[in-house]
Image (cartoon, rainbow, N blue to C red):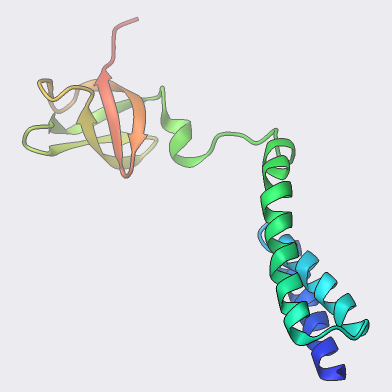
Length: 147
């Protein structure tokens, strides 16, 4: 019984350490499950009950608390990476032609594969474009209007 107790205690510690390092609400659910399994082990419950409790508590915590945590924790985050590019201006470095699947543009010093917002639009090299959205590794653009 000592070895089983030690297993759940070590699992709990590992999940808490990972959570403290990542700060991303990634393993806290499993730490809760490990804690319940540890308590059941100390109370003398069977291994099956401990394992079922570990998974049940972990899943319940994940299902019921994760949406709350995502909504109310880190609500003041700023847009980063690709999502921050939407609305910015880029310069076409290779003609954009959706039909030929060609086109590249540079924004903030990074070159991206680029596609026009409509297939019948070709945008020549050197044109300034506005980024409308990100689809995978491609920026979707339209010719930037003057003004």
